[in-house]
Image 1: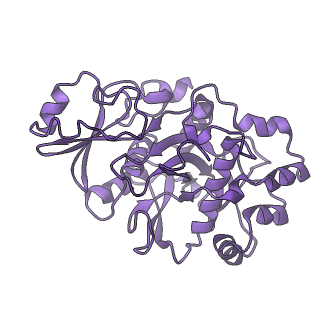
Image 2 (image 1 turned 90 degrees about the vertical axis):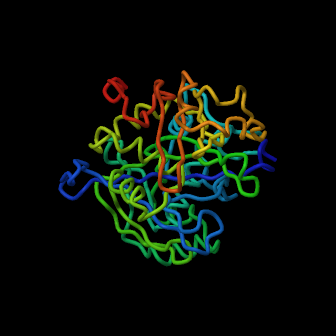
Length: 358
């Protein structure tokens, strides 16, 4: 059993960005859109929420049969090792144990690829003809039939890649972030690895009827505007990541950044909640109120310690801020006065020369 198995489930999600037709910038200057969908009311987790494609880890994601596929396709051992060649620290979801059949950097990516196909019918395959860092969405096969069979467990995703003689794009799925559900959500918690993949064009989408109410391709700014206008609702991780993306207008710049940062590892973000008199804050690593040596399990005994102070007063007592102030479901304010964690994009756009230095 994995270390945290009794506390949460492992999951993976992929942020799919695709270039606009003819590389045309939209009214806000973005030349790309992001793929999201609204979960149906009947889904067990985050019903009616807008999310990136993703879901829970499945045993097939860690099957040794994938190694047979890689061998059949002459994927070298060195190429597979390169997927997990990280020079920084990584959250536990990426730690390979003796019970794992595959390197977790591979199996967690396979989980993200499978969920993207099961939910939206987008099959990401290695772009062997180009080294530009973009992935490719495969079509020209009976997507609906395969999607249903994989979703229902009648077939495995490995069989589809084998039949198509395509390789799952492990290398174009860039490690982006990891979020852990806060401890006060005791009944249903996840550690979710987020990846970023980029496409040179917007592919067809085939929404799975039981999980997907509707899907949309929108720029980060359009999604955030719809959220603030109460047209849609974003969970905190999705809102935070879209805020990070909103400061990058060019998909080519985004891919260069993601490709360069991919080897640097990441810090798990598990928001720790504190009540205030006029709202609630979720503090993140680097904030003065973030617990020292936080184990991601222990409840915050000080959650109500500052309940008589306002959000503004609470912020004024801290030298180091990395938090989200919640004043309602659609009213959040991001405070972060330090450098971006793990050389990542700054949530407020304070990236300096980061996008060009990496």
